[in-house]
Image (cartoon, rainbow, N blue to C red; front, side, top):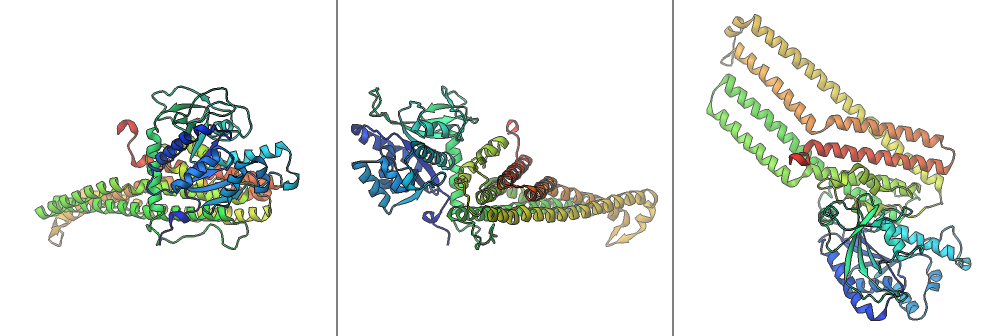
Length: 575
């Protein structure tokens, strides 16, 4: 049976929450309505994609959003920025009671973030320690959230880990970058989109302004995340992107392609695995199944086109050179319409685009999985790689960055470092080096065979032409199956180059040359990384090798996907 949404693990549309603690009590009913409307609006974009709220469960906005989400039946994860007994010092009175009740609520999945530097709860009194923990929560929300829901008054402050700090960090795409500037929403802003924040206007008790809550708006950064605009409607770019994500989720949660075999990235006995890495591996295996399914259908369609083209050429040559029977023309026309129907089916099903997108996702998850194990992914950004290659701007690929967020490396691990890096080397670097070496050798062998066949056909064509020049009369007197030798020779001279052309067309459709380039480059990257990780003298150097390899491997996958996509699609100006 297909895996249920409730047991989906990592694959969820995450709405991260940030907001002020000092809400004005008389504004609570209006804020609740705005929260409900905003969540209803987001949920309305999905039929198959499960929604999850992630909140720090702080007093005020976090607590309010959590309570509304529970009333709406939306899954909630309480991500406590520090252990519960330490975090309780930030609450008092009624807020503390509500916090304790929510933590105990069975409907809420509670996670405690690890203490930075490992201090114990007993000596965790310094404010800088608490700020470090809120930075960790901010980093999680920026990396993991598909959308940020902010109950914010719009004022930018310098408070570390505060609401405006989280909003600005999210809009600029990465923690630590300069805050983006606010600009008016222009006509092109709806297409030049980066990160997305649902902002509910939320006055604070400490504010001198007497502004009342006024619904919500959308803060949208541009593609470089250096500026953002406020909009009243969700840009079409996001509705299209989320529609693609929901379509993938529909397949991901269905029984489709479950019969395809799966090959785990590492053995279940490895001690380096945890709940998060297991979830990422599960998403990789499912994406790999869907990619293989679409690839088989796409390849079968290309073969079908090749057979139809070859058969059409055969019957036309028979009609033109051997027997001018109407039957052959009828078969030719039937084959033509069969090819047209196959073309329309391929255009509707879009098996190639689905194969490329699912393969790009699977390889992204593979890379992120090993980044997680090696703890080398803290400075790695899949979204940056997608923006650099612009793969996520292709029709049918937009949802990739939302799907890839489920595998973001979030926390640095210091235990069993040598053991985990050895797993990465054996199960990824060396394994992939061997795989690409083997595939490259196979493709070179196939290419060499094809060159031999082409040479024989060329020689045959030359011999046939010479025979027609020097032995024309002899051929006319030769008879076979009711036809003279000249007619049969001309027929063969036309048929063999035709089928060679069809085979070349098929090879072009399969993008064999691009695949050889990709395998060659990938082999070089992984062989070099295997040598470099051996030569590296310390753990940090080994991690740099893994991180650099991750960038090379993903860039190669995305660029190959782009070349493959371009081969099958008209450029925008020609469409």
